[in-house]
Image 1: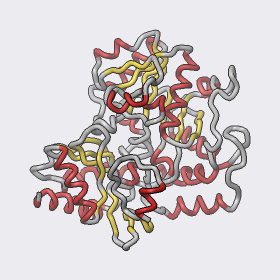
Image 2: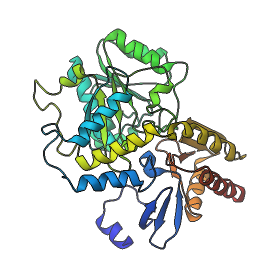
Image 3: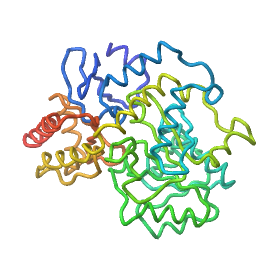
Image 4: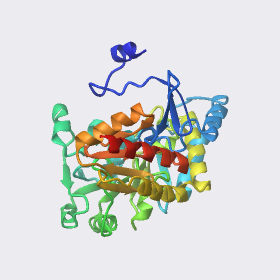
Length: 391
């Protein structure tokens, strides 16, 4: 299978980890040699309830017996999608009540950019330096990392960049600005949180000039920071909130939510201002609905903050210089990039899955399922510290 993997499946890096997967359950992934790996990554924040959670699996099976894809998005009334959008609205502040369901986080970012431009009649989009919102051309255009952008130029025009957490840069948001898009917590840059009421100040500046405030909740959203949406921690409210990853319970999904007034602008002049064939797919919507119900009716969000403290307690080591993030969106920083890579690679050999961040080479990603147990956290932390002892 490994030979076929490299021959027939397109690769994203020259040296993939290439673990051959047999099955996954709870906090563990198993390879074809029946080795168990404790998962501290959760599919890069996607498997909120762990692997093969029974409520998610049962929701999928139940929907499979009814119908699969029947029509392009928005034409037929399909109960799983309607129920999912309604439940999102229930847990979002007004007027965020209209959700457009798509297939991935980056597709939801694309839709949010179109919505901001269509609603305001302006073209300028402002993003943060060191941001990551995805890799489609529009999302890539929001990045200021020229090395990643250069091979794909030209990208979409009228993009400006500001420093995350810089109040003086907010003056660059003007009456020419259609939208300001930020990650609630900067992910690829090293799990950087907003400080000094920054997001509230961005919101106020957008209100002053008539720009749309977009928050990317693809990583921090759906309970990972101890709140259902990360922005609830930071005294602000976006005009458009973008979700993905953890919303699907392990299946591919994206969504952007705004007011009815704003969202209506995509449905006319022109009609089909945004369209997707498989967005809102009933099987995926059923899985997302089960995921959202479980997270909002259980103690998992409260426990995420308790588990954060457990990580911080058990990852005390002289070679771990800092732990950033909130809840179960954490990054442990070592002395240098080489040490970080060695820890990640040695951990897999010892049955623990860790991963990198996109732009910050010294950071070890720690984004386990919200369902991970205290015992599993302690076990994984001991593996990390024992590796650091031996290097």
